[in-house]
Image (tube, rainbow, N blue to C red; front, side, top):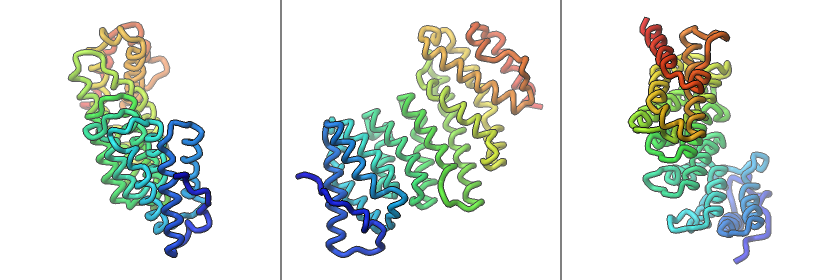
Length: 328
């Protein structure tokens, strides 16, 4: 059946609905959600836009209507979420719509789709992980639910096999700093949680990579995440005690990261992309540790330069210096 051609913008802000209005919203949501199951890119784009437009902040969708709308969307996209579905384009667009709805029902679906023990499709885990970060910033999830979801997402990182999914999972944890309408105490709490979860996830990843006998693609995710964390640690808008605590917690992790990289140097050389990722990761780690230990100096040779020159002895000496100073 063709999806409804009518609009629902004039009723989404209501706190109660007549039976006819309820039916119109449900049919609209389900009809356009079913329209996502297509391989036609134009039709897919149109269906996604139709589903997202009533959710725009300017539409002021009420919590009650959001729940009705959500139920209709979920009914419509159920075939796309099925593990046997082969329409990945439709699935990705469905996950994007769920993230914009951003309530408890959709967050459960996104969590399941981001979990590598339940979802085998890398594209689904990727967009579900991105979607969770988006759902945190929509602003309709109860804060206790945000906290639980963020902790579950962080736990997925150490078991996720694909580096590009890990990168987005780490990025989504930064979204905890951007939840709207928080008071000062809540903002400080979620700043701290965001940095703590990112730091512990990086530590877990470094330990996992350290057990690999050769260069590991997951270092690509770390090379992307560390510059972001470095910026967060100097961002004056983020709770200062959260920044200080995370910086201290990362000291040993970053030293271990550099030592792991030294052990993987020979095999990393066999792949230009991996060799560059390792170099970028340890360079950012060096900048972060040097700042914490008051060693920052423009004349100081960067770890990236030492890495590119394959001077692992000098890199080891740098780590030894860090360890000596951090124990004072």
